[in-house]
Length: 276
Length: 272
Image (cartoon, rainbow over all chains, first blue to last red; front, top):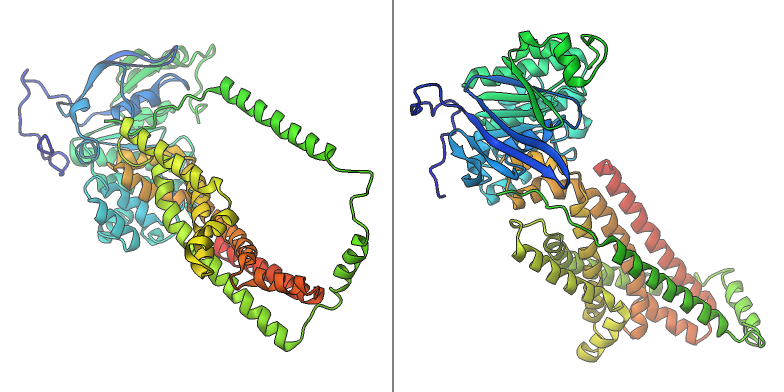
């Protein structure tokens, strides 16, 4: 371990003061960019996110949202620029324990292992902390089962704890993924289209749960989604991406029909729920 | 610091050429073999037709005398024991080698690729020699012992299982693996919590298929002189006791059907 691990308790590390006297950003992207062959997935991008912020990423498919989230999650290395999370260069953080304490990713249901029982998928949130032997033993007989149970009961699906994950509905699976994040307890929660496959009521619930996790913790949430109403309801800021280039970075109140039409390339006015 | 698999470029054009060359060789071999048949003399030699008729008529009925059934049962049991031991050993060797050959352990880098390539070579060597050849080799070393059959099955089957398992472990959906990585899982933990559970149903299914093949192989291999179904078949054949041969063959079919039934039950209980 080359660096002292940051504290596991989210929000417990706010003691150090930033050099400029302002609020120290929790995400600091300095010109990060990424290309796949000739395709520029992400043009050099500068932005910061402060603690407590809830940032929505909007933009059409292929606009670089997923690429950006994967870079922020440390799963993809940017070609250029440098990314600082909690004031530490990501390239110097050890993957595994250190990185997983700072940042966690949730995808549209796809991040669960369908064949495992729910409890194992939730406990996977502890893999960054557990050693290999403990991880192996837990597959045979679940360790820290109470933690998984508590998280699942907070989400209202404690009765599913021993079900095979593939038997759960989409909304239930998304809760399992959130339960995993609760056990991982990262400071920054990244969500890649977390509600795109859910009905409106389920989508509302899931976003409430996700953004609640941040209010608990002074961390930050960055989520890609399309629905302007949900963005206005749950987020404090919205970043627009198109073809890998930042289009706007505004409060959700300014997300008007013409702004959206320009972002998504509509000719007509943007109907409120068409993105669902 | 990244555990994402780098995209593996495939030499498409060269691969295609190699394949075309292989196809040509195979077609040439087929043409040559058909051309080399001596059509003028007939395919079945004189008296062959009668022998075939005798053989098939002996099926009605096969030898069902209690004494011979007991012998067939004992031979079947011997064959099953050989197959179970062989396939078990093949799994014990093949699974870890398959994991290494998949390159899913350890951080990306030259050393991981070198290990994977070396293991793949070893697996190819093990499976490129047929189990009967291994059996003949081992008989010279160990004599007529059960160990010969067990090892002769275990080695090539470990090569096949390792090869197939390495591919199954790599061909799982990537998103759940990314999910585990973002939870801080190392490659070994991604293997335990992601690759293995997702690949397990197919790995099991293929293992059962190989077990089935193992039973046939164990039966045939006792032709070299080790007790088992093949040994008894050979003895009965030498004495032209076709109804006994049929009894033994029916036992072999029953064994394969039993394994098939068992594997269906296990797969159903896994819900796949």
